[in-house]
Image (cartoon, rainbow, N blue to C red; front, top):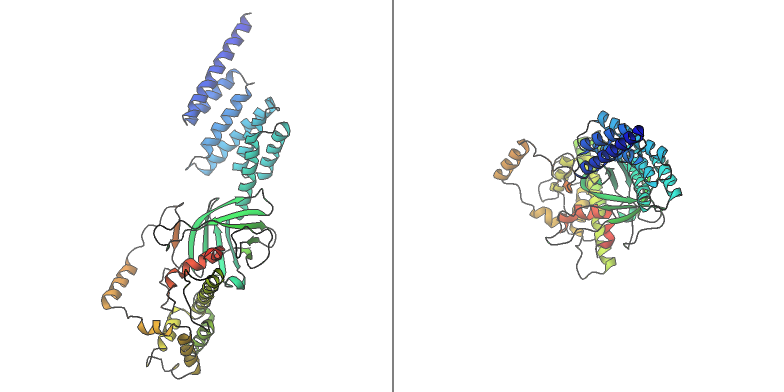
Length: 434
């Protein structure tokens, strides 16, 4: 009888320690919770609930910000050991499998995490386990997305190169024509094909305008790369990987060939002539116009696409010849300012005629020269150290990676928003422009 009484006393003490651990856990005092659960288990090693709760406490400690990687791994392994012990003691308790899956996904052991969820669901249609399985599936796909991908969009959408860098499980950096925007993304990998939603800030939107809606993609990853498809002419998510919205993204960043390297073998005179020729080809045959509120959706789309193709072509010329050569050639279209190697050439005449035809020549003629004060301010700004960048998690826009201003190339009245248009088209949002 004395032994039974002693056992009852130990059991009561173990139960009290478990409750003490639960109270500490609720107050987010996870170290204290682990200590209380451990003392309870020293008295009674058959408490599957204590193993379950200590597993959760170890998991919380392992996922805290700032935890060293070695410590994190150790804590997660302890959490998994406790979850396994919980399942061994009570294999019919569905929550034990949820504990296993929670830790396994943090260890990025996705298949094992899904298997644990399925074992639990075979025992019970537990809603928490269903939610856990969905979370594991989504996080597994998000982990496969991590890193940079690059590809070329369909010619209908401009035919330009784009890069998407999935920086975390929630942040994506979209780069087009040397500029980038950082936005948010989320996935639903339970759908086939998988759903990928991307939302980027429209930094030049008028005050009071609501944020741009997320663009609904479908996505899949195979040996070829990342296949994505955005809507075209509607905001409905595509069902198949086809049409103008489809793009195959290869793993890795865009080529970082130095600006002007492609034409480095040419003499200065040859470079200017070839640049003038390419600029003339890049310019549209008709006037660039801004979309109007009175335009039909088709007219709005056509105007936006013309501007996007113009921006794409101009950026290609700049990358090929360099900003300085491109600027010199454009300035040569002004009366009496052409360098000797370019003056009087048919290439310069064609470029001047094309600038007139698309309504951009006047913009070059009226472009003011920077004042000495402005030049001094610019030099001073360039000499100052860079300001601290916004913290992670903030939606932000980025300038060209080189840090330089865009070249003084001709642009339509909508040039202030051209980057936004291009990035929006990259994400399929040109369809909503009307």
